[in-house]
Length: 156
Image 1 (cartoon, rainbow, N blue to C red):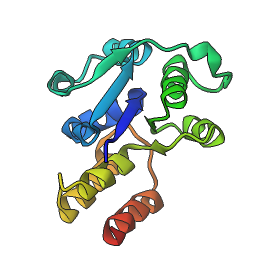
Image 2 (cartoon, rainbow, N blue to C red; image 1 turned 135 degrees about the vertical axis):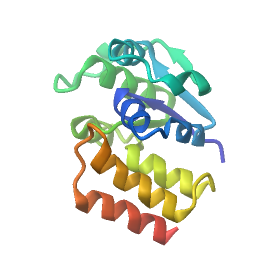
Image 3 (tube, rainbow, N blue to C red; image 1 turned 120 degrees about the vertical axis):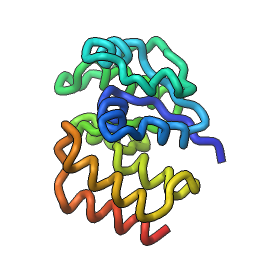
Image 4 (cartoon, helix red, strand yellow; image 1 turned 30 degrees about the vertical axis):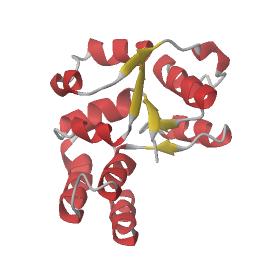
């Protein structure tokens, strides 16, 4: 099964914070909107991003009317919707907008779970990285969300 995704800035930043950007290779095709790349570039492009295979793409974020989303989130959602691919975001409002548009969405914890499902990580390493997202990154994630992610590993 071929997996294609488009990412907003969140997963790029948060996975880089735990030295796990390589997990984005879980996706056979990874798209990064130019708007998102510029956002990430402002904070300093994560070193390991250059090691990933991804395609910079233009997006018409004006077709997404959700004012609560920033330009990068709107661009990523527009591409996901237009191409029928997975949206990668850790932003709650973007996740809700994606759900409203019937776009499949995964956050950083979901990326780790998918990596486990595809055999890139074992269960203990997956659980450890999920916990690291909570304790070692700028991502706000509750204990309940981390525990739900770990339960997903056990159900696979």
